[in-house]
Image (cartoon, rainbow, N blue to C red; front, side):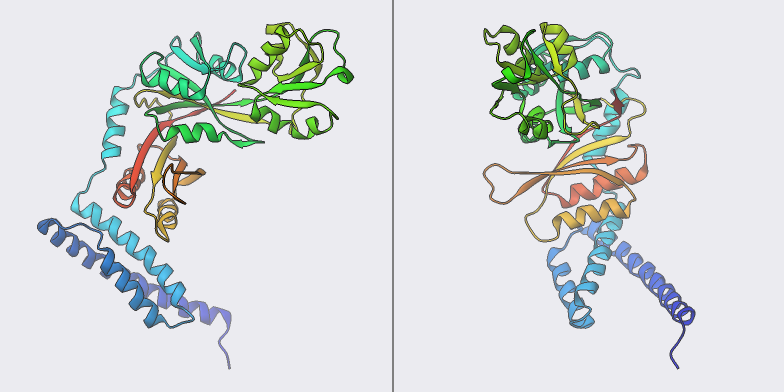
Length: 383
């Protein structure tokens, strides 16, 4: 007679107890290995031994269970490396830098700094800037690259950059520029975006032959624009520039996709309002500085990693977030220039930098990544 479910679960519980005791014994042995490696100056990771061990485990498990057994042992080996790093006393350069930033940052977020924004007066970056700071002095630049450079050079204390939209997705140009600039994220803002069709006074909908706007705004209004038959859509630097172009043009058959603020600023008429495809349309902006600043209440951390170009590298990283119960809010990948089919990975995680698991996370990531860049710890303001 076959066993019932409760009997089978009881059997599994007994096996689990044995496995836990064996795991504890294995980690104790790993601790002794760590002491030996520390004494001899040896690295924690022995890639050749791990490879051989995984091969042996697969043979012992048999064909049906080989993949499952290797998956389990990859997790055990990762835990063992992390445990050994702690026993050896391996610190984290990144986390040491975080400690220094916390001690050097004032308690209050600055309210009257000089801030770099891309575009012209009326750009959504400027609106986000005004929501983040009480009375900023804003300097406008033509490109996102110039915003990064203005902060890097010290010309501006902060810079505001769009990073993603809930409808159109990530602003890939900004992610690509992150690879070549040194900066730190000190705050982010989530701004609700409402696009309007702006024209000169007297222009009717049937008169319009061309619409100007930024690429992201065009993507966010794709369905609406598709309904404007025979109308040319032209990409410009940003939505505020589109409004300025319409206001200064001698043509009466042009329109801009832009904000209500730009209609007032440039003396234009709102021909149709809220024309974005999704009403729940938000854009996230990041506020960057030259050096790390970590203000009280910061609970979101961003980092970039270049991982070894081999199977399982990304899995090993994601497994660490899971093992430490750290919520991963965003994962973005961008191709590395000059390296075929290799990528930079961008992570947003939800965790307090004061939590001990965050120090352990950085210690482990430094040990296993080809390159790790800490981009900042901050909080997000909903505007």
